[in-house]
Image (cartoon, rainbow, N blue to C red; front, side):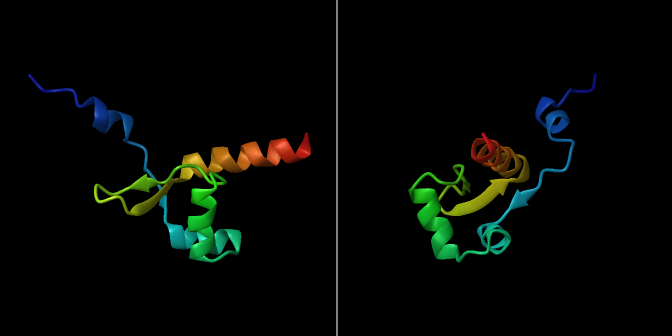
Length: 75
């Protein structure tokens, strides 16, 4: 009998992680500003390594965040 791997099935779509460097470049700010934005809760919580280092953000999380700030500015 073959086992069903739920986690593998749920992540079958490519998961895109945006790094701190990529996000800084996309926003036109420095990496230090990214850290300040995280500290001020101006960005979504990033994914972290077990050691606590910032790894990046799921692309879908950033897309949702951007959509929310765009909608709130337009309202």
